[in-house]
Length: 308
Ligand SMILES: Cc1cc2nc3c(=O)[nH]c(=O)nc-3n(C[C@H](O)[C@H](O)[C@H](O)COP(=O)(O)OP(=O)(O)OC[C@H]3O[C@@H](n4cnc5c(N)ncnc54)[C@H](O)[C@@H]3O)c2cc1C
Image (cartoon, rainbow, N blue to C red):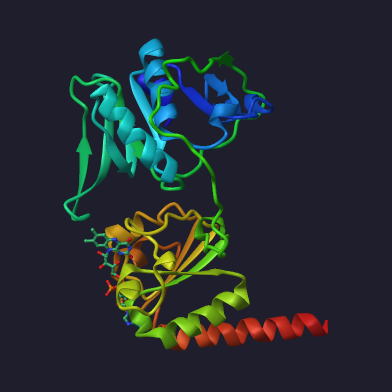
């Protein structure tokens, strides 16, 4: 869906930061009609108060119908603060957005009641209508090279900087972090892995095919694998080229985190599960037979490839 066309308004992207003006025009290729840019040294470190004051002023000036933001760590710090200042309400972590053709309202869909139902929320009379979406929950639209539009430059004013907070120092975390979002292939295991040994098997399989290891919450809650591997509503959201679900039934809370992956392969003894129905390739059978068999075949192929 072309969102701005459906809503009957232009789509503007707001870009805040320091030293960001170069290549700003490339954002038009992603669908922006206008780009509002604030390039200032004061924005080099994230400060939610300053950005909130600035955005509040920009919203007052440009009066958007809709404000959308990524539900990243920064977005989660910034946007609730802004919605509260604007007294606008906010639907966080939407999994679907649409425009009501009748009246142009933003229809904001997200899981509710612990993910047992999907609720579609309207903002009623309140404006702007505000929602956040976790990165990669929705497929990335096609890039439109050569598209252009209007670049509007705004400045920080004295009132924006009336903060109580000052960033004194930024310290980068030194230990390596698992970033599932960057993986091209994920092999994920669920309750059917039966324990840590099951995940060791999955790890060997993942290493062989160059994949990262993911998990369902059932596996994480059982203590078989650490939380950073969890995918879903309360874990990571991924959009990999290939997602291999091994013994994961595909409850909505898990699907939310991986349903935009390009090719989904599911292995399950039960072919009626939501994951098996969603999968592009559904393999019915016991994963403790199928994974070792696949590993053997891939190993043979590699050996044969090495000989020739
Ligand atoms: C508020 C809330 C948030 C949640 N957030 C998340 C989240 O972020 N991520 C998440 O994953 N879950 C989340 N959940 C939990 C979710 O509802 C499910 O309980 C969970 O995803 C189930 O995990 P599973 O698919 O591994 O287990 P199950 O549903 O038990 O599925 C196991 C599957 O393995 C198959 N199987 C069994 N043995 C074998 C075998 N030998 N070979 C092959 N297949 C086999 C079974 O047929 C079954 O389909 C959340 C729940 C709530 C209430």
